[in-house]
Length: 145
Image 1 (cartoon, rainbow, N blue to C red):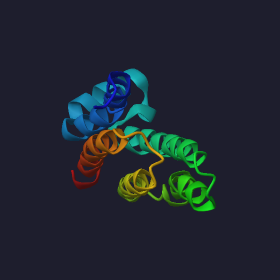
Image 2: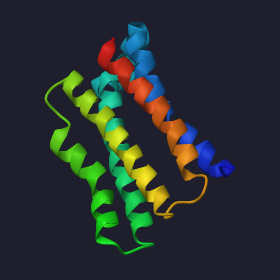
Image 3: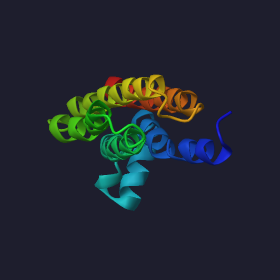
């Protein structure tokens, strides 16, 4: 069972992704958002920049799990999402959004491995699978629409 705070905050963390995807699908919403908050909050930018922030956040989470084992491989894997974001995100909207999407798939692969190593709570992979599917669907909207 996923603890309620983890599930609630995890789902709340999806809101910018969902808003970004909605803005891509409904340009009038994107127009209203950028008129109110500025271009920085345009749908495509939200997907890229918030996705980048969360990839880096997930590096920190994985680092925390790595401290349970002190194995160099766990520490190395935990740095991959942040390094991936640093080296690959850029070069235009579609390319950057694709890089974020691939980054989330890589994070999930790390989640699976850390779970196999028994470094995560028993409910971790279930939560991460749910969140990853929704995040990737939102990013696909940003790439394909």
